[in-house]
Image 1 (cartoon, helix red, strand yellow):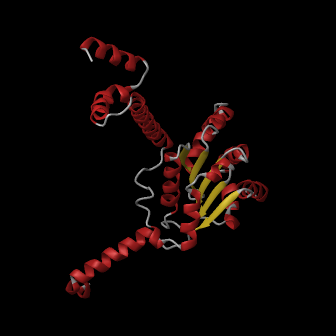
Image 2 (image 1 turned 90 degrees about the horizontal axis):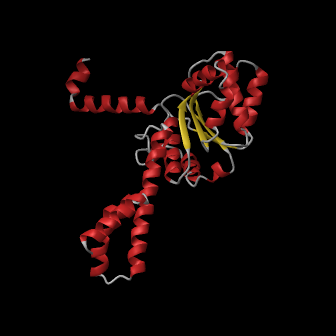
Image 3 (image 1 turned 135 degrees about the vertical axis):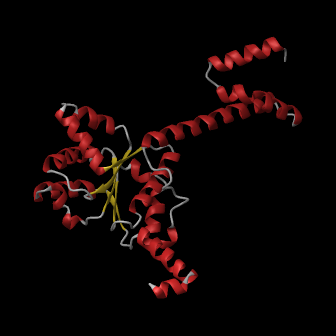
Length: 263
């Protein structure tokens, strides 16, 4: 191809916003020549590469916007320390079918049991399948909702949050909130009921949720909306951080038995 025609091709691909085809068409052309591809095969290879790169870029954008802690992923999740039933439940969520059904996921366990890591790992896999998931700490979310209510922006904020297929609220009940704060959270949950999935981690069993929502009626209504269409996972495990600390201590004592006795 002449220099003039090559430059025209590059300008056209740039105007059509096809950066991958623009960057790789010469490499693919050499491969097509070497392997005697048809024109259609050559074009198909370029189109597939462009589509693949666009999917990758979209996933990276959604992952960044999701605010998920990327280090808490499926590859780093220690499945061996989890009960078989919990592993089965987590694996069943990876298809994302529950999101289509607007079902919720409620994961309970004591502090340090790995609740956040487990749901973050699932959430990242959902994003890689093209789902939109937003991660937020409960205390930060209620502060944002409360500020929006005071500025008369609460409906607008709830509408913006509804654009996410799944809303992941981490550590519900970990920090005690005021009645006003819990009222705006209940409003959000009520608006998402049967319209979008909610993923929740909490160290408090349902029987203690009155500590969160402050009165029996609101508590019952919140639990009813979350549980009606839900997957409930219980991770009654010892603290992962405490386990690691004990192992480090035990390893140190084995390496220095004299110092352990002296202590």
